[in-house]
Length: 491
View 1 (cartoon, rainbow, N blue to C red):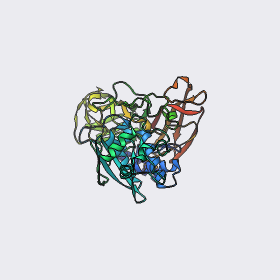
View 2 (view 1 turned 90 degrees about the vertical axis):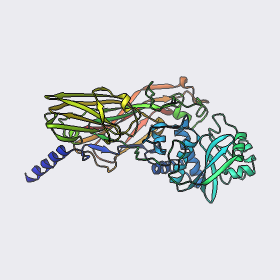
View 3 (view 1 turned 120 degrees about the horizontal axis):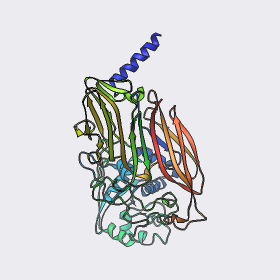
View 4 (view 1 turned 180 degrees about the vertical axis):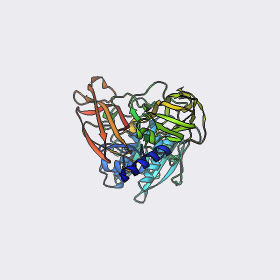
């Protein structure tokens, strides 16, 4: 009896104090055994190396180059208003696009994480920003923007730009000699002659520091995590569709500027991208609908002079409730629903993690939250907060998500500490359509001949961490992905 009373006292104390993490899933991660975990630079390097089976540094560097070719496409530099910034993980997980210096800053960070020195190398004619990576005692030139690298004439290693300047035939005869990427070589229209000219007009900078970036892309992310902290009552759905009006960056359409050239004839990348048309931004949905009658939904709300009582948050005098709804993806839209009873109530909004607040009102807050991540909402009331909810849109890079392949997929769910929120379970849902091609495809930007199955939805409720489950996918192509949803559900 004494033990039961002690547990009850602890629960009530947590409910009153809030903000302790008891009802939240911190670092809610979903991965598969056949895709790259893009939540950290370390996991990217580890998974790319594992999946490629790379046996030496050349193979490892090529595999990392290939991964970046998959997740990044040509568009503008990704920009955010200060004090926000775009680092390598945000470029991969949120945007998926960039110009030469931005894409090569991401490449620099990945290669540095693999343990290698990297240096920028700027071209004056044509204007271009490249990088070289140093391993096995030599500098090597990989260009994920132009889509190229070149083996030396003896095919012993990847050439550097000084090698190309000394012997332009490394580039000019590279395709004929089979010393260039097997797939996607200069696929967006650049030329071998232009590369030779650029190398001849290049300037090598000293080996870069990790924090060195280019243009709008910083060398490392600043205060950004690619993993969400979801409160009980919240669900985060990443979808493969792009919705008009929900691309958050200014001055760009968020669409690959070179059409479908990058995967049109690519038998590796093509089957993954065939269902979606040209590469572009993607959207998703975030919903938060806490039931204050459930302890898990109420315990992680930061309360002052208020408590959960009878399915409501009830104030003692002037009370307040802070809902911390930061996400790894920028908000594109948001609508807030709040109902106050037996007194006055008002809302305020913070888009910098509670540092500053501005007035808000129930309804559409899209203009205030667009391209923001650290969104908090505060309700102040003298009676009770009877109802509260958020329905929002987000933007993300679908190319970096743990999509499914045809065949067997082992999905693993974990959190930062692999502890479940008190009184809650996690739920993961995949929705997709199996895809079948009638025979061998010559092009991968003409999906009209494909056959799609009915929408399949696979949901798994997780009550122990880490947890793995299997999804078997039919067809002879990776399926058409519809969405992946992570949710924290109060028991």
